[in-house]
Length: 55
Image 1 (cartoon, one colour):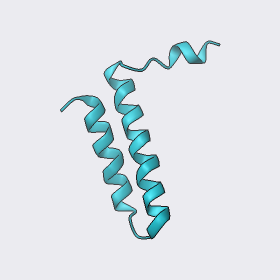
Image 2: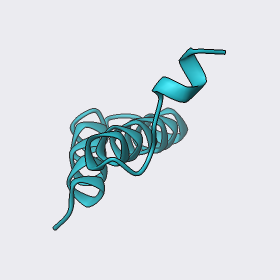
Image 3: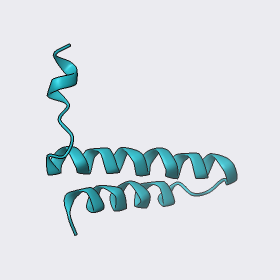
């Protein structure tokens, strides 16, 4: 399991921990899953945020 998959799984687990409510729970899982994926990709080195910050 690479860092992106681990980050995605962590974000999804956090989302499911807050899963006590319909549509808002879906949005919570979606947002936290995306945040976990982004964090995993940054840790893996596939996404470089330094280039975007220097603009």
